[in-house]
Length: 75
Image (cartoon, rainbow, N blue to C red; front, side, top):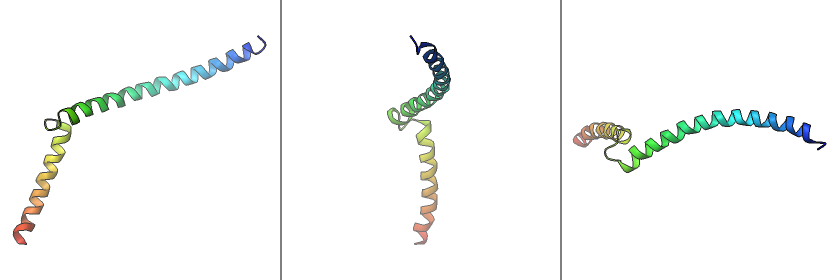
């Protein structure tokens, strides 16, 4: 009972600061987990039909084909 007021003040201060940090961190983690969830849905389960993966690969493959075809014709 002797340490109870000091414990309440310290615990409430720590709880308020940690609660604010956890609130902002939880909002941040919800965005990250939602992005990763959509990324895995579009990227792994529908890999060939996804917008995230197919457009960079198609663009890079077209660029490499365009860059590699004249070198093959010249060589």
